[in-house]
Image (cartoon, rainbow, N blue to C red):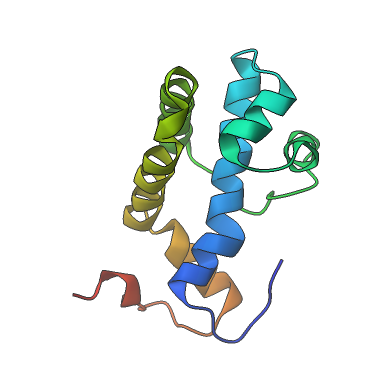
Length: 123
């Protein structure tokens, strides 16, 4: 998607991780029989964006492992029960991505940060 020499971890989250999380949430919600317009409303995105997620035209670079997919499915269930939880659920998923070093993997793939980069874990 983006090819820069230097991306901040937050840019990785915005350009890669958030769209991938939204894609997986949309797919999980569809599997729970929500309509596309309702998914779009809950996620705060357009129905066209949801359609692009379903047809793999958007947010296809990040792949989640089975453990992460289960977390996303649980988050989708929580959000369907209480739409106001969308922000907190996405933040929880983002934290999991950071811990699993998904951000690091993308950062290394698109930037010259080296294999020993630990910038996200500095205190």
